[in-house]
Image (tube, rainbow, N blue to C red; front, top):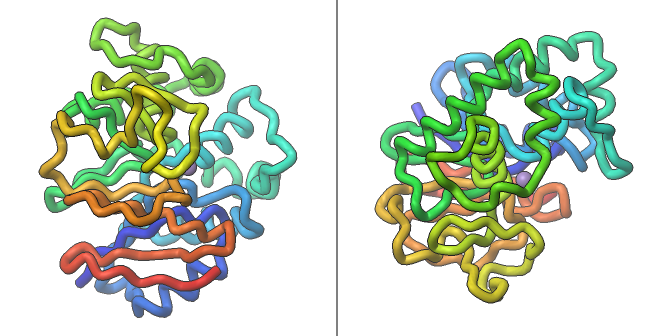
Length: 265
Ligand SMILES: [Mn+2]
């Protein structure tokens, strides 16, 4: 039995199937973990989401910003923009069960001592904080007022964490951090205007995984979201978005030996 962690698919269903053949995925033996952004930008978001849902006990996923955006367009009052390619999911006859599936996915997963999120983790958060905040957001996604909740989550503020924030402000910070983070300050202040390579951070900021004071610096962390990351050589840091939807690669990493399997897209 092997555990594989797979980076951002973004609707590239055909690449996913080729990758699963390459790793000889067996639903009898193997477990898959998807690192979020399973839909959007690619051409087969509906097929991808159905496939992952139908894996049932053989797969888990964390929510990415594109998965969240799909929920906000389908169940909140957000409108899809021109680049969004998930409208076939919204009009599918099984849409409700697909959204129920997404609403039940966490923002973070711990498994055999490793941590998985879509984007990043504030330096001043420990694993308990990550899981606690993931659960808090999930509780609202599963609640009866999900439509209002989704609308309330669209803001870059607060950009700094405090346990004294209101419940909704805590959720907004947590969603922005776990699903969108690239650069932040050592105190967890978030920055969203820059998408450059991590070696050229905006003044006063660093890539979230470069802060020396990180509480989780001894924990293996697997994440996606940042397709332009390359040449990262930080202990315990595993960037897995290899730019599939931008004609890069779709990759899986085997947990027991950290071997990476990739297919060109
Ligand atoms: Mn993303």
